[in-house]
Length: 365
Image 1 (cartoon, rainbow, N blue to C red):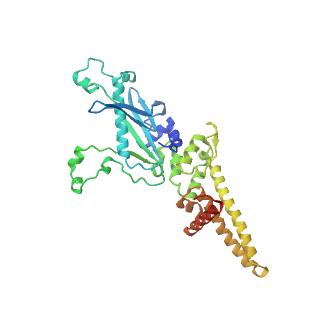
Image 2: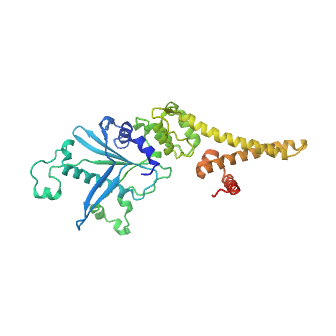
Image 3: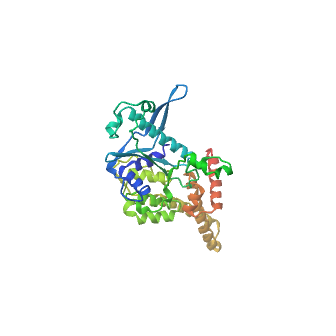
């Protein structure tokens, strides 16, 4: 997990939100997992394995979020991985992490820790088979459910199950015997920007995931935020920081991590201020360009033509100025088109002007 994931991970770690995520995605919106039944667990799985030569080595894996779900005397382990990029080996990675979680449970049973967890550890004399297995006949481990929370704009085009990763000849693919004897592993993928049935969520997951469905269309995004103004005009710092990451707008929206946790942020105003700032800079550039074009148009006889030329040039130059600013912030061309309705020619012109400005100031591109 890289630094960009931290804001999303912290946001999803809230017990109310975490329970809602599993209820909405796994249990169809039914209230099965309750926040008060969840306990945070160590995110690190560290086990010692011994190879055939007797050499011992440590195997470590880190999970983003791990919760112990206690339902009476029963228990399950719920985990969530936040992914801001496609992981093309995710089925193997997920299978390995789940396998290590089960291995770790067996290790804890062997150390006698399972008794405090109410697992019914076998306390009698071990049989030979139990001693060799390091696992009692009546011992039981708890299921692990892992969700992959993927939130990049790009559509997931990686494998979603182990079978997708196999290289098999066409004739072998038709053999059902392979599926019978080769166990599959399927990841529980959540495409955060394309979730249906948002009504299944009962926390602010509903508002935020709904926002992600229109994050690539500025006007739709503005309308959605205004429609849900009661929520977005008063979000906490943790949610705001997560939204910056989920919208991939860290270069546009201000970093508010320095604020106190209990402070609230008006998301509506924050986005309006950013857009107003960009428009104002573009209009100012447009006014200057228009005045210059009008002056060059000449005397009274050419004043009307000059004013028309100035207005048109001002509009064009204003848009170019906005595009240059967005390019300098790192936005890609599709995002810029969505925000400004700019053309390919205008974006190309803006790039040339940026290059000329950089060369003129000695800045390396």
